[in-house]
Image (cartoon, rainbow, N blue to C red; front, side):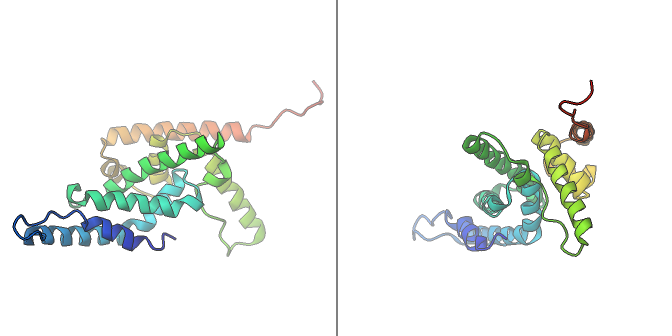
Length: 213
């Protein structure tokens, strides 16, 4: 996944360094800043690339678009690294991932007139180590979960997948999304209500046509 990304975002990180006014070359301070930004970007990538890829999938980005979307997130970070507060890289990346996911989903709806729940199923295929019957049950569960998440606004969906699937605490989510903890708790509560309601609709027995009245 996300192969070939590193050269692209590394070159983007330093191509706009200001030139020294007399020599036309980057000043020592600019060179230091660029090197520091590149180092921060490299660390951010190593620490967060898998998390961002997985988050994009769970925010509804189809598997075939996830690599490109992940690269887009890190290209944004590369261009703006000097604006990102040290220690807030993960928060910036996740917020960027939310925006990228919304853009990808809009493109899908524009192109197809709809989203496909099986493509947006948040997770990957069932565990290959499972027995066939268990793998089938897991696949159905993941497909159902993907369908349920499709019904949620992305703000609630983000909180839900971070808390319920990634195991991120409320305090950490508040830091990632740069919102108050009370807002996180409210969105999580609403997302759980959405989840229960959607599960109820999907599992409700369908009326049999031509059956007894």
